Image 1 (cartoon, rainbow, N blue to C red):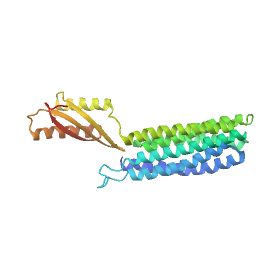
Image 2: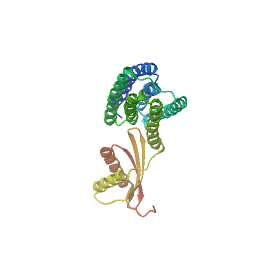
Image 3: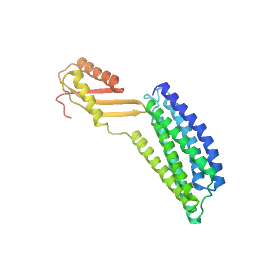
Image 4: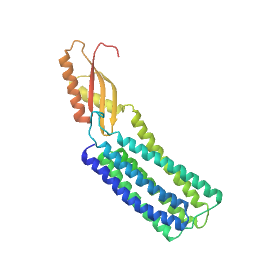
Length: 290
């Protein structure tokens, strides 16, 4: 990721912290006034977003550090780790909301909704959706997985606030609406946590190279060498936006070492230029067993 892209990560993080801190104070106050578990839970979720955004900033700063002796491929995976931290925070939050909602169901305790709760919730929907769209835009521009994870978190918050707003209008009629909303909110957060964790853990453990990518690289190699070659054994290692590709290629057994090296270098340069990956090509004699 370029230095300018990391600046976006840091900027989005600080904007999120400031906005969510203000929202937390307003929501928590409205939750106390109305006695609503859904609003109080939503307030704590917003405070957690401040922590998530702090993780975004730390992850962005680490990922932006250049490669060094101890980390020869850079620090890009710090973004994946930061996204995992966000996912874990969300899962803990979801569990706490489930417990609180259950306790409210058992005590048959509802909320006391009024104009303040409605105004605060509408404000939350608008602000959270704006933050989410800004986050998605920045993630698309920078290719940052942690920004995308944070944006999904904000959009889940906006959807949760819509549900809470709907429940507020019904909460005056049915006591069980508020704890039900808290439970729905908890499951929405749990789903967002699962999507983030499953994606980021898979990226850290390693994934199979996309067959479409293999096909495109093979086609470009055939075009470059002006003949069909057997290029295989692809491995792709991702370090944030930095990617390392390795593969094997079959070349005539009697070809000189100098010529084989020249061909491999041409392929590596083409992959770097067209696919933005650092490639390492391992030549094998054409008559060697696979």
